[in-house]
Length: 177
Length: 177
DNA sequence: TACTAATTTCAGTAATAACAGAAATTATAG
DNA sequence: CTATAATTTCTGTTATTACTGAAATTAGTA
Image (cartoon, rainbow over all chains, first blue to last red):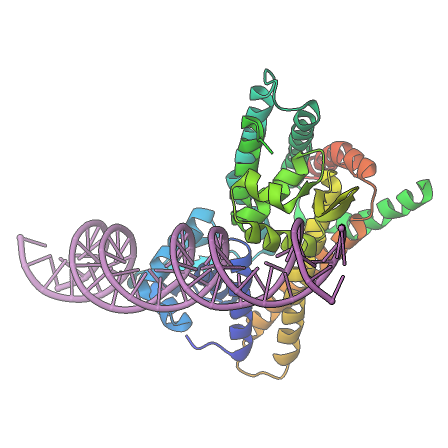
């Protein structure tokens, strides 16, 4: 596939952003490509389009699938796998947040709980530090619970909330102050 | 400084998490250490405590300062710099979000705007793809605006909103469905 | 001003992650 | 069942980043 200047710009930037978020360049570029294009693409043409090795595409595809960001689409009369990305940004955002929660937040909560338990009969760790760890656990639990409750609210409702709710909230807060 | 088992566990985990979020291990560990400890620490003892080179601490400290996550504290009768981290998790979260917005979201918005402008008189890029890029811009703008409006709401209000607002919202949504 | 402590910079090294290309495996068609 | 297409796995290479230790700089002290 031939990329237009605009597409190339988008894909290159997305790739760079990926590296800053713990995703490697190729993975992010493939995701950007499949997000933009209308028709599902096979691995070979993805490789050619992005100028990377076929094997690299294979690995990256697996990675994207493990995130649930792309899916395999069968194409009539073609035995090759074709891949397609979700197009809805709400859905993409939800998937990424869910996965990062599962991979990073949950293990951190587990670690914090362990710290709290283990430090209960621990004379060395100071009271203040124990408290700090407990506060961290409380804070992260709250954020986590909030996300769980909000993630299933339909996007249109969220949009409304964001556009009006925020203004009202901050207005109310200023009055109270 | 001597780390207790609990502290070590916390710091090591935080360091690993850092690597997944585009921050290197040492930087994240130093932040964790200064977050936990009560008294500000000088660079030398940070290096000894974490078992890394003094120069590495110097670099990492600069990085943390560029994020605004730690500050220098003068100690009477000691010419060495002492460092301390914010302890309030709301504040820490706000700082990190602000910085990531500035470093990653803003440049992405700029890129998207350029794409929209440049592709306006671009016959190659298909209508659908142009639209997709515009939608991405709209979505990210909305998220960005929402964050700007919420970030100054006082933490106690946010806590209340999270604990009650979320439940109400999701309840209302289910009824509507 | 000279001396010493503290910090930063820098160059080289080590560790890690990304990637290409070949080989092996799996799946499909005849 | 064989031949071939498609995909994956694996090994070695390259690129990138993290880090150390030494040297240079800065700042504070006598």
